[in-house]
Image (cartoon, rainbow over all chains, first blue to last red; front, side, top):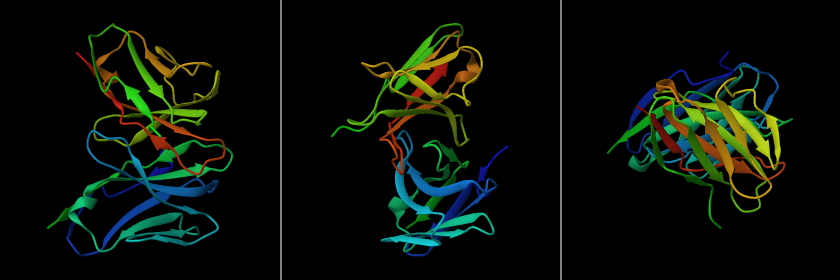
Length: 112
Length: 113
């Protein structure tokens, strides 16, 4: 049972344009959501997060949107840069524990 | 402040051998998590430990796999009698109590020949 899903395995965008990465979840107990970025041969690094009491969180070029009724969140990167090319993982947490449940990841390629 | 340290970075084992993966959490972190990433897949939770205690091992295979986080020293993920299907990247993460996020190490790439 995959509780966190990223249905797009890959995404290609032009430098300067917006990148939108999507994530869906099924467990209504999740109350905190995170995005991690992963380069090859490295561990995931934290990017941005959002609590379930909010619907938007912004940090520089990165914005995460949460739609609780649809159990959907998205990560917007604007403007996209070639250095943003990486695999992006959506993760969710139930407040009772620190354990994160990850989606399968989306490989973003930003073309110069 | 050093990050999460994992070693070795690469580990090659023949079928039937034992694999030991080590993880030193960030300074001040008392929670350790092990995740596994199979080729072309996402990160799958394996086990969550605090010092000397296993908190949640719901993601650990029932046989051959074990984990510990002793009072002194690193956390160890041990795989006995490895099989080719164990080939994967194993990531360790750590956090403080009540932290919002986990910090990951660079992983150990296990290859079983």
